Image (cartoon, rainbow, N blue to C red; front, side, top):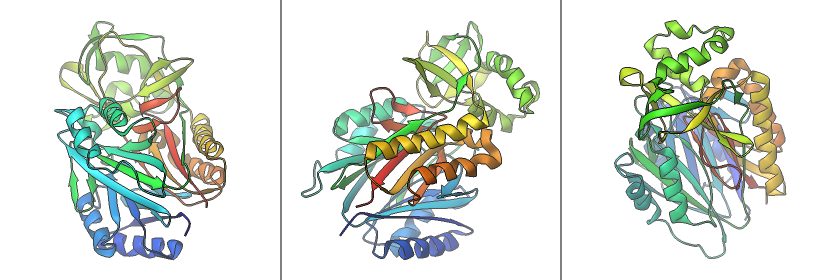
Length: 392
């Protein structure tokens, strides 16, 4: 038997999503899947989606996350659920750790210690990480889990979303789903997988400095309230995009921040960090810790650059894989969708073409995870992360 993959996209009630999604997966796989990934809008509550899939596939591992947008192959939806399944020569295990905000280390350990170290006949190990970014410790959690799983385990994954409400993000395994949690998945295969990563953002401002911060909360930048500085620095670029930075309603602040994010110098490139919401006294809440003294620039991305970077991530995964792609999981930042609008499907098409038109499934995230390169590693924002599986 060989490794097989399948993807599906469905909208409507939870019952409609399960019926349509399972029909699509079964038609492509021809066998029961070993693992199903489910990425669900808040229109289809994650816990209900996972439970419904387990009823259809009682011997299959089902894992998932709430999302901010869903896609499969060359199609994108909102208020939908995206499914990606793997079967054949693969064994999958997953566990969930809770209390992420209080202790990233303990939560990561609770998930990792329940996973097997190896599986006979399947020497290659790949980790998929799903977590709640609103806990504010996404980078810390990723690094803790990576160290516990070991250098030989390639990591990819994404931070859950909630349709840009920025209130409740969930991850789950089988019938269990929670906020403030992390899910670790281990995939054991005969042949290596490969990860590609790229973002299309460029610096918008000169260097700025975080002058007061606590954990994932940045209070001041260059000695002034962080939110005031952010709006001023991005005002002209926002105006060019039809956004009035000085008259943003509260429910649009999150999408504004996800469009103009922070770029931290990483060699000759930039590692992007997302402020998720405005806090008290003009502070900004990030998805991970931002220490005082951090130097960064506010970033921006144009549509052409975002489309090219999506293809670049897919091509990188294909090149590293070194053989025909059989399927791919894609974790793509919601901010890229905000920038691209109707052209987001064009970016999906570019990825699908670069991945040999194999089944792809994924979701629009509040952060992306990739640990496969000495240049880019850990937790990211405004980024496409592609995890490719070979056609065997």
